[in-house]
Figure (cartoon, rainbow, N blue to C red):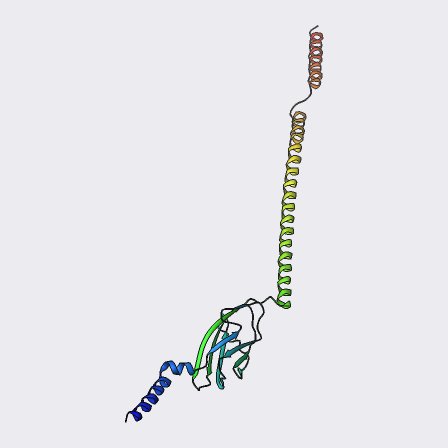
Length: 220
């Protein structure tokens, strides 16, 4: 009887170990590495994302979602499973932070999932560099035009000030001359020279003397 109970207990314990959560978890595959790695910062935009698992995963049910800061999915097509590797082509990768959410079917038939992130600090492309150069040239040209316009405005203002000063000087010079001309005109129109009065006085005296002489002869 004891010999029959002992094998039964051993089989029961083995079954409990296999069915326990820990034993089941150990049977599941797990993610070993990724390219780019979790939390990595890469200088070149990757063309694909590769996940490597501890066991061969099923092609059916493999899902990957790679989104940028704006929430745009940059995955290009469906992921490809080759043994323990899961490869996802990427498109429109630029500088920024990316979040990866994955879900696959483990070799034991159970689904497993996870998430991680990476950052891209890619150098600008030739087109972006040309655009930046064109923008700088436009900015420099606008700055030069503004400086030229400002200088022209200052010159025009200076010219107006010089013209006003010249006008003031001409006005000041012309005012005394006009005053002198007015004074001369007033003297000419307002009174006669002294010699005219002298001639008139002599004529009056001569006329008075002639009248007196004529009157004297008349009485004689």
